[in-house]
Length: 168
Length: 168
DNA sequence: GAGGCTAAGTTCGTTTGTCAAACTCAAATA
DNA sequence: TATTTGAGTTTGACAAACGAACTTAGCCTC
Image 1 (cartoon, protein in one colour):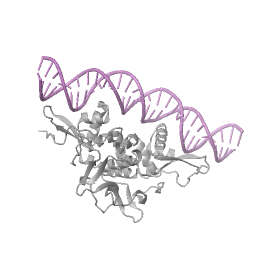
Image 2: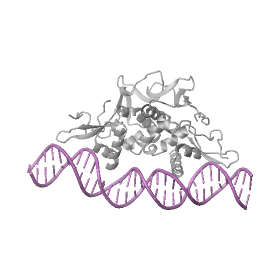
Image 3: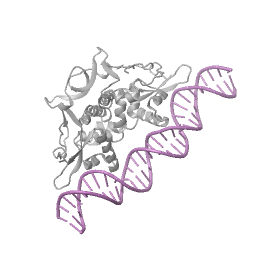
Image 4: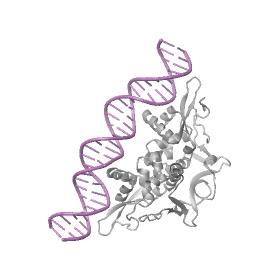
């Protein structure tokens, strides 16, 4: 006797047109394959082309395209640097706009760890001012809790090369 | 004199392997084209195949595939219903796991409204218990603020067909 | 009960995107 | 001059997205 939930399933369209919805606009740009993973790399401070390539196992040509896209969007900055004994290279670091995606990244991470990773998480997020562990949640608009700039990421199983990155 | 930020751009790889990172696992599934937009529809209570089709202007064949995918992932439930004067149809509604993406959706929305929509947002999120406007932010782990089940979405420019949806 | 209608889904040929591998380029080094 | 190395481009095979047309199942009208 297939329980037909007529009450919940009514004819209905989106109350917010796609071209006025921040979520839809963001999705359009960010939800393309690889983009969020590249942003994740930047979030962790991985800035070099070859390092991103190695971490993500993404085709070179695609990475080139995506980096251009993200720079054009103002999420990444192309920053020249010069390793000793080499000519100048380009690195990719988050802009302010890019850093603002921190909450989204952490929200995704929280969800993924809970629902796809058996509740395990590899990092904790703490308030660098007092060491309080933090999570992403709903807060009353008038109440100002910790902000992204107060945030420090602690790796539970640190590896050799991994150095915690600073906020911009 | 191209300011070469050698300090920031060091050789470095991800401190968290992709297959152990909730964010990477989530991205793998959710960041496929259309998926977040389909979840957005579900979040707004748009549950019918034809309605989603109309809102998103997505190819029918792709929508079929994606809905199957999201059902298989446990994010959507395929729920039969029967409109009067028609045979039973299938509707798609968020599971608990799907609803838990609410924070991610709202974080994305916040970012998109701020950075791609000129600071305008079409909805506000309020605590249904007391009407307090809410935002997504960082909260100390031990402090329990409003949860997703307390959340109500208020449309600033309501349209005729749009009816606010309840939590599951 | 023949024919039409509609929501949901499938099929099909074209276009676009992804991919891996090979190639290019420029500066630093040997 | 030849070699190396990080960054990027090119190429051709393959997969996915696309839009349009087609199918299906039940309800309706006549």
